[in-house]
Amino acid sequence: MSERAIKSRTDAAPLDIQRVRADFPAMSLEVHGRPLVFLDSGASAQKPRVVLDTMRRVYESEYANVHRGAYYLSERSTALYEGARDKLRDFLNARDRKEIIFTRNATESINLVAYAWGRKNLKAGDEIVISAMEHHSNIVPWQMLRDEMGLTLKIAPVSDDGEFLLDAFKALLTDRTKLVAITHVSNVLGTITPVKEIVRLAHDAGAKVLLDGAQAAVHLPVDVQDIGCDFYAVTGHKLYGPTGIGVLYGKEAILDAMPPFMSGGDMIGSVSFEKTTWAPLPAKFEAGTPAIVQAIGLGAAVDYMTGLGREKIAAHEHDLLNYATQRLASIDGLKIYGTAPNKAAVISFTLGDIHAHDVSTIIDRAGVAIRAGHHCAEPLMERLGVAATARASFGVYNTREDADALVKALETVQEIFG
Amino acid sequence: MLDELRELYQEVILDHGKKPRNFRRPEHPTNEAAGRNPLCGDQLVIYLDIAKDGRITDVAFVGKGCAISMASASMMTEIVKGRTVDEAKKLFESFHRMCTHDHGESPEADGDEDIEKLQVLSGVRQFPVRVKCATLPWHTLSAAIEGVKEVSTEAGG
Image (cartoon, rainbow over all chains, first blue to last red; front, side):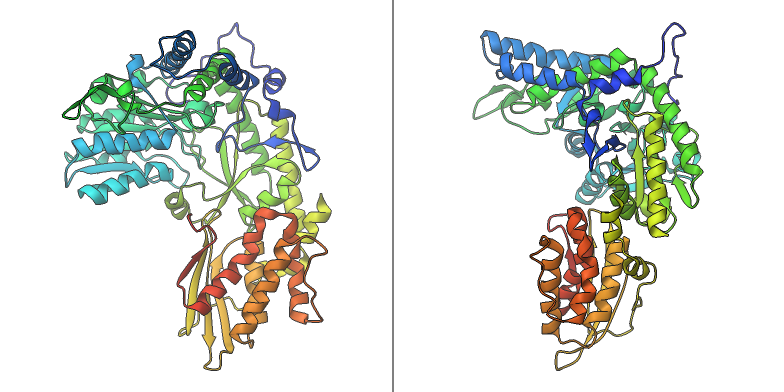
């Protein structure tokens, strides 16, 4: 892995995947009379029982609004909500808990930066650099800002096999480059981008760096201080947590200097009709009643991942990636998109001339769930010269047998299409 | 498992999907419309020549998409050519019912050979998310007739 070598402790046994699977109720589901083979964690991951139990427990016995009530339940839910922030601080290794802003998802995290940081710090003629393999959520907010403010949007290219081209990226940086917004792991290609080098080059050019960690945080240990980025966007539901909760990490000094994103309750220091002052971080960016129980659920999810060991999760997924790649490559006519050496457990492919949706429909009947389509990355699909791909993405609960089931189901597709 | 799939992916569908008929771009169509399914990226353009008497004298399409959408478009072009605009609209209604209603509620073909031909696509009923693949070409045809330039399966998509 790119950022930190996976150091499996020699005294530690590998993950017991059957025990992990038992932690996830969905892993015992059947669909169309077949055991579920869930290979769409890249879209959203299944949830371990501890997340579900935690959320239920909070709703049943520890729930009230946060940050306001001077009574037991409110103090309790506030402690749990703020405790979740501490867990996320640990998870990303942020320097301070104030640097962890709860949002709805990675999309909102990116939009927060576009609106609150971008509008204040950018001016006409400034440049933003993104990459050719961004998800729409890391393209559209910058396009809108470009059109509103007269900015220039530059696109860092990727190679045919899906590698981030560092030299070409470097050549795009000028003294007008004010922001670099790049994904940490491509949701289509699985490519792990060289984020430390990206940050170094961008900072040398005087630009801030936002990393889209929606895919990365689940596959790799992430250390925002080591990476050195200014912003890091995360979504909870891909991290085995609930939907409706995400995180924006931002360096304290930068967040401090930013105006609020949304305004209302909970984010104010004091309000009079003449003047309102902002609450200190992180409350300044958390207007209104937050997703209290979802945040606590996400805290339970990252605890769960930490408990399993993130290096061990990464090692397990790496094994799955290698095994599945090898098995898939043996299928006649199957083409894999994204073969960068540094890759997370995401495999996009096409099968001969057969459209990805036909592939998906057919293998669904064998219980195999994959994603088919453009994966919210239409410019990348254009670059790859393909309208749609099938994508198998692996999570901690997947096994080599899941890869075998995928291969077997793909053989049925070929049988039907003749 | 295979039975339902074979009902969806019948030989005739696979054949139309692989070798779509009337797959071309005419130089001067009287009507055209683009159809898109933003969820899956399927897209096609339907070209029509509509004579003054309302008869569709030529119909062609280009596009890319799954076997179901391509086969449906291909079969549609064969069937609506020579029909009047009103007949084409009625066919669309029948076809739409056929794709969405359960067995037994299927509209009677009434000996209409063209409706019978389209029955081959009725397997999509067992695959609700794929119904839009089969109906996208017809929605696009309808748009072209009405003079609407673009149509999407997802109004808000």
